[in-house]
Length: 177
Image (cartoon, rainbow, N blue to C red; front, side, top):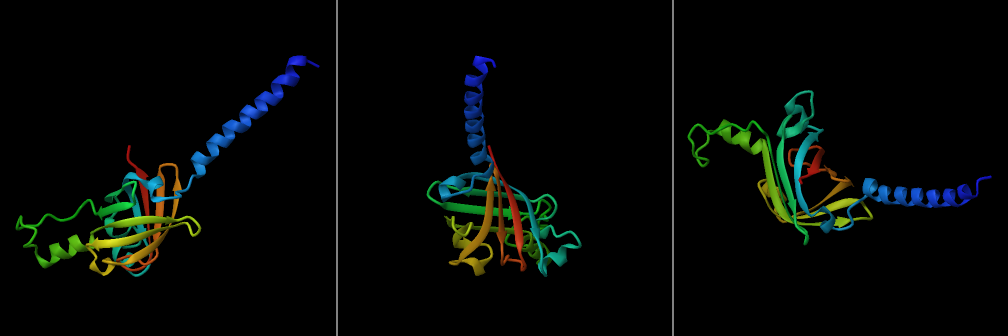
């Protein structure tokens, strides 16, 4: 038996265990507080089911289409703002946002959503709790919503159980660097 082998094996085993232990939290890390979500996030995709999704055809991409645009900003104290929209919102023929045609206005309202307020994390339930101060969907003004979420590295996904367009929505975000 090689005398160096008996000393090297335990050291390599300990080092290997430490490396695995360091790698696991990175892959499975969850948010404990809003501070863990602090930063800027870009919308990757949004999917809806339910009655509203049928308006968009057989593919449940939701109101933001196949190439959604969106940003979510969360600060270290839990203040947040989310803006989501279709990439192909119509230009208003009048050139004045206060004078859109009924069809133009309907497209813009159906294809965009913005809201802001404060965000906390319920670690026990795995939910974001959004206290919405104001929204372009006024029914959400002053409400508190609970959205189940997962956070894996720089990927965030949350589910909106009662989406503003009806049904359930899932949105996928990537941390901006």
